[in-house]
Structures are given as structure tokens and as C-alpha cells.
Image 1 (cartoon, rainbow, N blue to C red):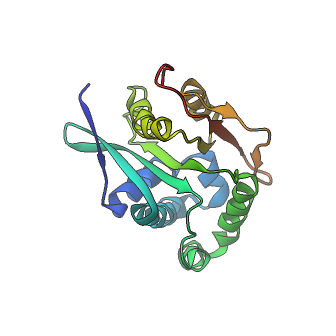
Image 2 (tube, rainbow, N blue to C red):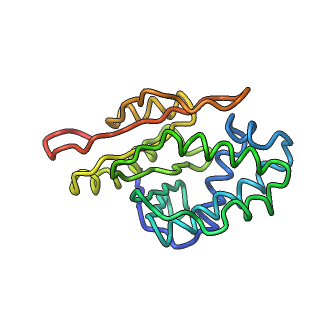
Length: 199
């Protein structure tokens, strides 16, 4: 497998890939009950966040044969809020805006306050999973975390992704993000590693 990781400058490409990956997952189904609304709304949401990361974080793309195959969006916490985020969400999410707001509040409540790097989103294009691309994306930024001696934090949105993060040195936090009558998310923390430690 030949894969190349670069910094992305295209919020639309990053947000579109993330939305294409996640518009059928449990979190999105809870956020947006009507199936036909899920992809367009999530494209707006993820593109907004990718654009914010271009100014205040890091957006990585992994390419295979010249094609964008995956994206990771990181922030160094604390980072500024998106100006007018709730108004923007209301403009495209309509009656679902309250669910977006509640999800954000529940995540914020458990988000650690100590300095860390935050993996907001990581996604692989459909058909590209199981080939190590997600691990390569993680390791790209973990090297920076380890060099700077700083921890990393994320919320795994499924048991499958949680297992991947466990393999990369993350540990479960004490509390879960529990959505009312919906799925759970798994907050996870990774301490920085020395050069003698793997992954």
C-alpha cells in the first residue's frame, strides 16, 4: 500500500468525506431522524468544522493513488468556538438544531480542561477501511503529541473505533456521553509516549 499524508486546505473536500462516512452512523441517525436530510446537513456541519480547523487546528488528508481516502481533524485545546455556530446550525438543521446543541453540551460537559490535542473527527472513505489508513492518520499526529509531551483526547462513536483507539494507547475515561434514547460515545484519553514506546 502506498499512502501519502498531507495537510489539507480544502474544507469542502474534508467535510464532504467525513459526512459521506458518518451520515449513516448511529449518532447521525439520532441527530437527524429523517434519512434524506442526513447527508446534506452533515456536509454543512462537518465542512464548517473543517474550515474552523484550517484556521485553528490541523486537517490531515491521506491519499491513495492520488485520491483522498481519509481525513483527520485536530485541535490544540483550548481552542476558540466557531463564531455564530448555533445560528449556522439552525440555518441548515432546522428542527434538528436542538439535537445538535444537546450533543454539543453533553460532549462539552465531559471534555477535559487540562491542555491536550483533540481529535474532533477522523474518517475513511467507504471501502478504504481495514487497510491501516486510520492507523497511519492517527500516528501522524501522535508523533507530534509525543514530541511535545502533550496528551490527546477524543470521543469514539462506536465500539469498533474504540477498539482502534485502545490499540493506539487511548484509555477509557470514567463517564460516557449518553444521548437521550440514543447511542453512547466513549471519551478516551492518551498520555504522550516516549520514543521508546510503540505507537
